[in-house]
Structure formats: structure tokens, C-alpha cells
Amino acid sequence: MKKRVKEWIENNVNPTKVMESFLWYTFSKVSDEDMIHNLKNFRELFEKSMIDDEMEWIEKRNEKPEIKQQYKDEVKKEIEKTTDRNMKHIHKVVKKLHLDKDGWKKRLTWL
Image 1 (spheres, rainbow, N blue to C red):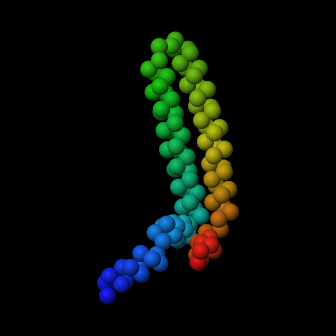
Image 2 (image 1 turned 135 degrees about the vertical axis):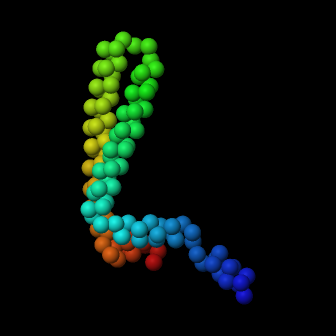
Image 3 (image 1 turned 180 degrees about the vertical axis):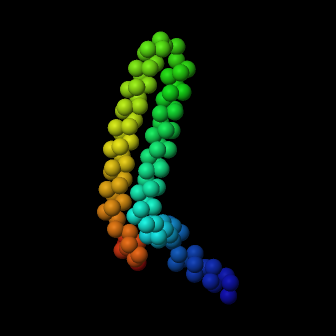
């Protein structure tokens, strides 16, 4: 009996589809406010990580202090601009998903 059940599961349950279902279900449980809060936190972490990496790189270089500072200023400005653009895109995509209570089910084309 166990072997038969195991065989049925192996033949009829797609792990990728199960994971996809779980992810959509999980998204549907997050409130809009929490999603925005998470997006802001992610933005801060993402931006800080990128800036830290660049600052570490420039500090290792043998450049004049004014050249280093100019580079740092340019990097910060560019990273802020790029991060802002990327976060706006993510925010727009999240809003388009309409993740209401049962919205996740509509996203699963295989159901």
C-alpha cells in the first residue's frame, strides 16, 4: 500500500508546481503595508551592500584622497538612482499582482 501511494505521488505531484503554489499562497498572506515595509527594508539593505562593496574596493586602490572622494560621491549618487528605479519597478509589479485572499489561485495556470 505504501509503495502504491509513493508511486502515485511521484507520478502525479510536481515539486516545482507545489513550490510555486506555496510562494503565491505566502504572498497572499502578506498585507500591502507589510509588503511596502519589506520593500523599503530591502531597498536599504540592497543599497548599503552595494555602497559598502564599492567603498571597500576604492579604499584598496592607491589613489589621491580627492579622487577617492569623488568616486565615492559618484557611486553613491548612481546607486541611489539605480536603486530607486529598481524599487519603483518592484513596487509597480507588486501592486499589479493584486494579492488578495484568493488572488494567488488565479496566478496558477495549471490548477
